[in-house]
Amino acid sequence: MAFPAAHAHRAWHLVNARNQPVGRLAAQIVPLLTGKYKPTYSPNYDCGDFVVVVNAADVKFTGKKMRDKIYYRHTGWPGGLKERKAKELMELKPEEVIRKAVLGMITRNNLRHKYIEPKLKIYRAHDHPHTKQLGEQHEPLPMAPRKLKKSWHPVHGNNEYLENITIPKEIRLSAMALEESGGGWGLGMGENMGEDGDFDFDSAEGGVSQEEIEAIAKAMEGVDFEKVSSGDESEHERLVSIISKETKKES
Image (cartoon, rainbow, N blue to C red; front, side, top):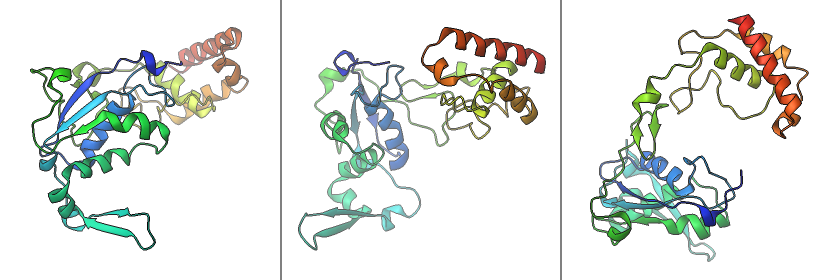
């Protein structure tokens, strides 16, 4: 669905970087900047939010990265490659440490340079000039956990309802069979999914077997998925009837 950037709702988020690992902090900021957590997200539109990061000087590195990690830059002149260790950059410009980590996770194009980068505001200490946009009582976003679960949301934090949800076996069967048959809908519901945010079908109650998936996938061989994705009602009804018939048979 096309969702022009002119009509996008732009929120302001406050992120406290104190005692947060650089990479984990950046992974929390990127979906907010790009708007990827929104149902109206489109990769070719600017639909992201503003993010204000405070206490950048108190961010931390795991392991020996503070001592060993090296940041490079180039002056643009021959032989102008410069390097600086993470510890030196933290003392000089801690804001750049977070900025480099965040922008390194976003595709480098005109959308990033002109629209996404300016919405990232990073400050060394707790003070910032965006009280009017955020509000005086605005609380920082919850800290991202070490292992992201399916119930985690970048704005609202942990969602207990999603954590306890159970998916019926029929839905698991049809979704996995679609992937097996080459439906190509990007469902992301395979056996390797789990703690990265998608539902883990195999570990859920009443798991499905490979034989069941292959049986339903075989029944879908005659379906034209291009017509289904383009909105062909007859082909869509045919697919739904096959899924309904086969899942009832398997269950």
